[in-house]
Length: 176
Image: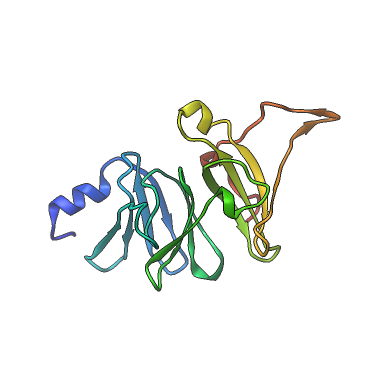
């Protein structure tokens, strides 16, 4: 049990996403855009990381849409301001924005799945200004080595589907 009831209330209030990484660390964020919390099981310490876009190596946005495992033990978070890559060893964030990802269009970049064997990542990108824009993002395949992105276009037979989009929170990897 937490010894600080106010901290316990803040970390549990309005939960949106919970992710447990390979080391057993639990990551959680809430829909009130208050940043992200790191919970270490069997330890009463809760560490919060608040968004501070002006500070280098910090979380760039409190609006976190996805949290997924990344290469080299890092954690990738999709935000309204790009991909925030958290290094749990150094406790720092690197941010990848549209300018860092050739071929990608959008300020909100949401990682969906990463395949380290194929050196590929799949992301949604677009705007998160309105809920309609959030659910109409384009999907991209990213080469992890070059960071070059290629838009994925869906077809129904020979006909291109113009308005097909997949919300990032509904995407799951197939058979791992």
